[in-house]
Picture 1 (cartoon, helix red, strand yellow):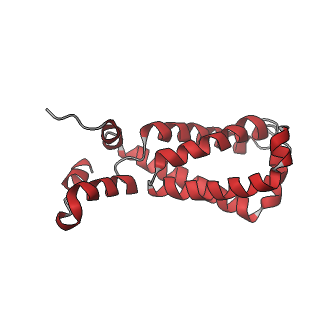
Picture 2 (spheres, one colour; picture 1 turned 180 degrees about the vertical axis):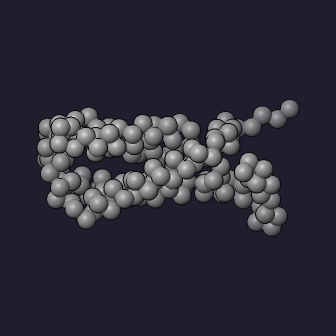
Length: 160
């Protein structure tokens, strides 16, 4: 009896609706990355107003880092490539956004606060679960096992 690797079990046992949620999460993060890049002044003001001295002093550099990391991680989560890694990278950013930035402005924009909490929880979920069956990770894993000549994707097709 051969035992499948743990990562393979968790990736292939995910329901299809969870893949749809991953794609939506990737779209949200990608969109927020574009918004941050287009309006760096407001992101810089949010970072400066966190009340944490290190962040306030380095607001310009953090604005650049957060904007492009959010864009890149959103794209990676959207396609399902390095989903766990991208989620782990985004978790501290969303943690600070939820507990230091949006918690101060909860009366002004509750929808932004709720969206931040939902995205934060989904990032934790995908950091644990992985990308699922319909993802670039699974495609490359299947392609690597099958080889370029055979193109055996029976395992992938049987899960759909």
